[in-house]
Length: 287
Image (cartoon, rainbow, N blue to C red; front, side, top):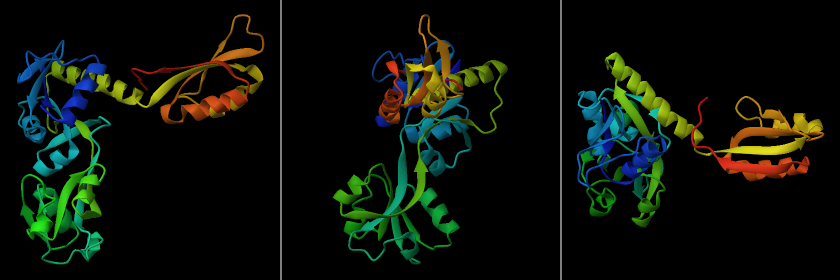
């Protein structure tokens, strides 16, 4: 049984469950407060705080885990990122009051007090830049620290920056970018059965991650326009071209395309006199 540590609450937990469900590994719990659940087959989920997952994996309590890379960096536990899951994107940024003279990281002078719940990452970042600052570890909301005179600036996680603005703060620099990762121990020596299970897990999740943001497009196009069609829908290894029964001078082309620009693709194909255009979602995609 492969044990996988998953976040127990919050947006990261919700998106993790959605991904595992799309990969055919739905979380089946015995109740909302259950500490573990079956994922089907040889997989079992352990529900813990996201910030504790690096330690669970590094210590071998769990064979793999899903958590933010920012939390991995802060804990300092030796784990290996095996797959970028494509969600939970955020940045660890330094922010100062709107009326502060500090507008960039270079403006931070020796002795500047920095309040943060990421003291290890913050300390290492400024040490690498040879900037001697005073790190003030705090828990909870850091935004209030400059207003109360606890610190000159803060280092905190943000996705959009809206919370900083609401509290009269502005970003002065980024220390770290982060997304959710599937991690395992760096020195993990699994039994062959577990190695196979880890590889199977990575393949299942990766196929869903790759499919997100894509669409499968099919269209009937004039044979004489195939060279132009290849430029419009290159696909993964070029579009698939299929003869149509009684299709005359037309052939069917199929390809995986970018979902964000599919409307442009359709317009370009219509300009080539394409017909019968069909676009569907892609559930899984393997290279």
